[in-house]
Structure formats: structure tokens, C-alpha cells
Image 1 (tube, one colour):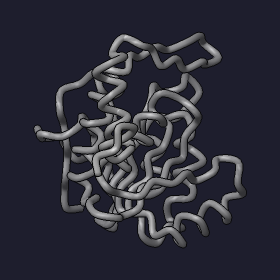
Image 2 (spheres, helix red, strand yellow):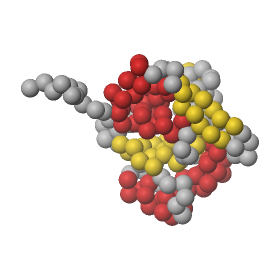
Image 3 (cartoon, one colour):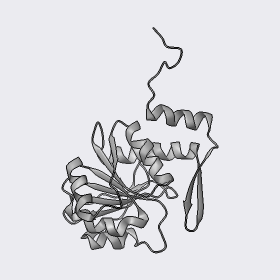
Image 4 (cartoon, one colour):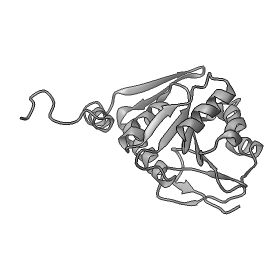
Length: 201
């Protein structure tokens, strides 16, 4: 019997689609020490879709785990919408935990990709060698004036920043591939053309 109350699954992807269709101009506001940043639901939905494409390019499909190491902001919301909508599993790595606790949580969950806020890159980069299953790190959000650049943080964990970006059909990223060849650190940048660099180091 068809219900008059709900005739479709109440999934994250449907909520996202509804917000973008019915409330496209409603704003998501992120408060920062420098003021506020604003993004419409239509923009959030579009960016979440591009993030899902980038995650697929990193090998995420099915029920693989994606961790976040982020503040409560618009970029984090986009990850929260993108990951479940593509059928993967999302969880937070609490930025207030002790380093060994973050390592335990990421390894126990068997995270394959972690999305990190640009302003938290330095403390996260110090943890990268302790992760057993993380293959990619996506760096999101505007860079804090006091935050290290992606390339400088990458060099602290033994990354090679010499790879030249090449064109790709996925979310704009810039790779910094570790010398082990096992992990990559990518910079998400919505204002650039689609870029993705892969290199054998």
C-alpha cells in the first residue's frame, strides 16, 4: 500500500536534492574570526556532487570509510552530504582528541580517505605516518593566514611536491605524493580548473 505520508526513502541524497530544488537560494553561513562566509544550498549541492566525484577518483565506493578532521563549517557540511549520498560511510575524527586517540580511531575504522580543514593541516600532517589504511588526504576550505601551505605541510611528512598537475575530470585537486607512493595529499580548490596529479615517486 502506498503511504500518503512518505512514498520514498528519507535518504541524505533526497534531502540534498530537496534543499537544492526547493531552497536553492537559502544560505549556509560559516562564522569565522575574520567574518562570515556564505554559500547557497544550490552551491553546496553542486560542490557536494563534485566532491563525490573526487572521492570516487580516490577509490571510494561501496561502504568504504571516509574520515573528516574539520571544523563545523560549510565544507564539513558538503562532506557530510557527499559521502553518504554516494553510499560510503562517513565519520569524524574529533579534532580535540589526543594524537594517539585520533590514530586509533582512524586505524580501527580503516579510513581510506580523510578530508582535512586547511587550518588543521599542520597537526594532521604530523599524524599521517601513524595511519595504516589512509591512502589519500583531501585538504578543504580557505587557507588560514597562520596555517602552513599544503606543500610545506606535505614536506614535513616526507612528501614530494615536484609532481606537475595534469588535467582531470574530477574535483579540482593538487597532489603531493608521498615518497612511499602509498598516500597522496590533495588540495581541494573550487576556484581553479579541474586538476589532478598522479606520479610514481
